[in-house]
Image 1: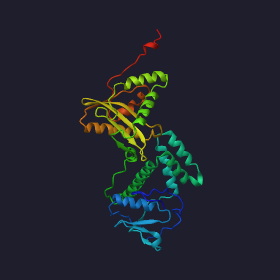
Image 2: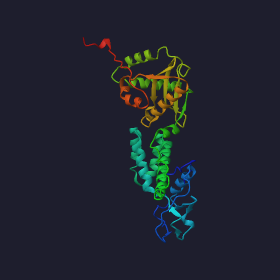
Image 3: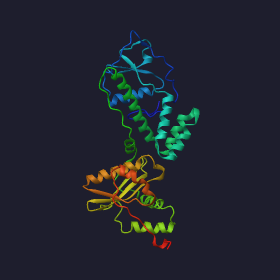
Image 4: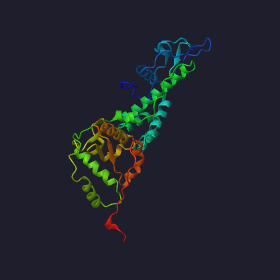
Length: 334
């Protein structure tokens, strides 16, 4: 059995133990009965059910009146069907399908490739997947994803047993990744010890926007853009950073305050952490925190390759106002 997380067990379903079908479930069948879930499905109850589902060495039923979980190994005889109901099935096959679903949910192609490769390992697939998660440093993102999906399965199971009696159902679990990202990274309005890494990432991100230009010209443009800037992270130059659980820089949003307006100078994510929703999480936090500081307007400029992210920024509240065109006079064909 794995080490226990505060909520759902972090063990990978299917590692060792008996299969879900290795123990026969015996229920007395005097007559068909519709089971009514009378207990309240609290967050604590969901955690208990999820933990029991992942126990590969035991099968459980739940008392529909009290919510008590009963291990079948302690009750070898038949149990009254109108009082007990089986928990949702959760074996190695379900665990593997969940891992596949997690991989396809990632937008980062590097993570997808590494984890998809682990899923082809055959007998050692669960260990390979675990090692790949650690190598990619997105293990907590997987745990949060798994926990959310298990909650959804449990809520659906609970509702299906109440629906037959016309009882009120719980709302479905939202399919959002932002909560996962916000829980996997820490955010701070500070430079901390990351100033050198921030400036390096800022420069690299700027250079990425104009792949066709020479390094000399790019350095000149970059120096012009950053000339006269106030101190990084100062009162007039707010900086929101995101850190990994290990305290490493994951990304940042850098702004410049002018009166009641804020202009985003840079939004940059460490290359290995792109495509998991971190950029969206940083932007939304930047916007809401600026609003709490009584700022009324926020602008940004999309230059070079960043113009392809126009739809993304519009999805979080921005809208086009002006269009800036540039002409390099020393490159005129006439």
